[in-house]
Image (cartoon, rainbow, N blue to C red; front, top):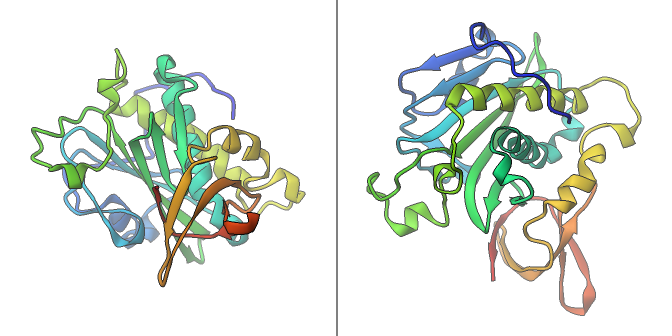
Length: 264
């Protein structure tokens, strides 16, 4: 996904900017008929953000919170979308913050890390309708300029989070970030669309080399919390369907579709 010239800052018909909002994903899903492909819902103050597995997404002042609307997607390709979005986030940041190049990594399935600290999280939710086919509402929370101590969040709430301003000399403004994120996400939408193309040129296929290069978990001892059990082993990469490969005892490889991962 190559970079392109910055769009004009004076014309953002696609941007729905809210003073405050419980959750930009929830807002976008509730107003499906009013939104179109490429629209972006943005707020400076999200009060009840959601993460994966119904966890709370803490969004103090300084977190960029936005949801991007992508239409006419191939439902069979959606399992790999969160990882692809993670790459889009990485590419957008690297375009605007060159000093971050080659330092950002993907923690399967939906986090962007730098030095094993969480910089951004992703929540993709699929809906369907007569006018837009299969739609993904892509929620992104990016720690742009966050003072975690001033926000009153304890260590457990913060986890291993880090803010972009603490690792970059110049932090891009919110609109520049939204422009770049949207640019790459629209490219992804084409790759994940219902357009008839060979499997090797759709979905995650073209992104696998970059995904594997950016894999933060490869070679790490991990524990994956599933609904009824916890699986422990060594992360062995990502397959073509976006599943996490885990090497278990006896060198047996298990492909994990979803779960909460922690380093052991």
